[in-house]
Image (cartoon, rainbow, N blue to C red; front, side):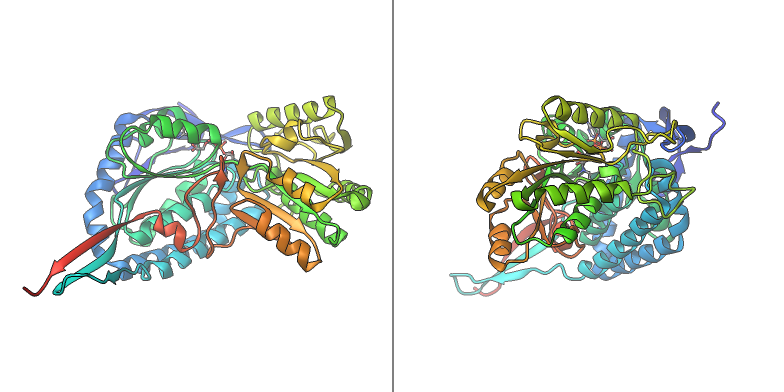
Length: 482
Ligand code: NAD
């Protein structure tokens, strides 16, 4: 028997560990200590959760949008009330500094409030009929039972987007958080419970991908899969889900930044440092590769090295205001080292970083790393590093930079800095990514669609479009006059 606290699942309105195959450790990445354990749920547990969601579906659908909105609004208020506890759990299991974690919790509260508003805006329409005496109603109905699977990098927001949109639409859900970050997700589900969500509407099953995630996506009674995670697992889900299911996939990225000839250099450096290293680069829309107009190149690289050197790295629980904490797990660190070694072997120049901080022998810490003189064949320029590493290279014409930026199997987000209106509009039009942020590095807002092109996925989260993914059409054709 373990001496750390064990956390169960939430099924049909009950917290229960019945049927847990065994227990998975939850580890603090700053100290490498085991801080809790969660149930690893097998197929029988998943089956109970899906059955509960199915039973709860008709009543939740028929409750009506206004009542569903009330519950979502209240859930947002409960999230704000439990802000500190959820934030602390996140820092302990994921590693991001406490102030960042609290900011994420605040955004979750806003997500629930936003989808409370969208819930009552699910509108249909009438379609003209050729024959007299007929009326066509085009209505929207919830899809049914959704499986929501999330990664560990934004453990409450990525669950919250699915919960907010799915519940607003009238779906019931079975949620599987990442096995690395279950504690903050448990905190979110407690808020829904406190908000008066009926039993079975949201169920939480803990566990890893191969056991619990696989049982969930391949379950025959799931109507919709909402997945955020890696390309590899996204492709596996398509192959193994069985049956016909609606699927939305938010997958990986390898996001470019173009620093155009007219860019404000200081602003570009500031944005690049924030979006390359925030959350230790463990962000699907992190800037991974930077193309800088040759006359600005040396100053830009020097600016990046200087700014990266000023970032404070610490255990974000002890130092809530730190810029960076540890990476979330050792596997991430292995990949980072591999990408840095690959770049250096292929001729990149190390601007800074490339090693564990000297004063941090324990924890998954790594210094923010700037690699200059990079070429397209380097992993850092063509694959997702998902760590605090950025590659930089120089270009001569803006056309060339746009071509380099677009030359990727990934299409999640792109960034650009420019002051000239012509350059701004050229890049806005020609960069082929789901999101393009110009003169800022915050590509996502809750009320505009967010999704990837090419291998970065299919479907959308955020905005009305996020909710559309949980709705289906029904055409009702009525003959009302002979
Ligand atoms: P991952 O794909 O390893 O795991 C994601 C989730 O899927 C976890 O809950 C995991 O347990 C589960 N899972 C694993 N195998 C499964 C299977 N066979 N069937 C069902 N579920 C399974 O990803 P990760 O390491 O947790 O997260 C990092 C990845 O997520 C990165 O590639 C990142 O770009 C991506 N991501 C994308 C977005 C986006 O919005 N596009 C946002 C955040 C993260």
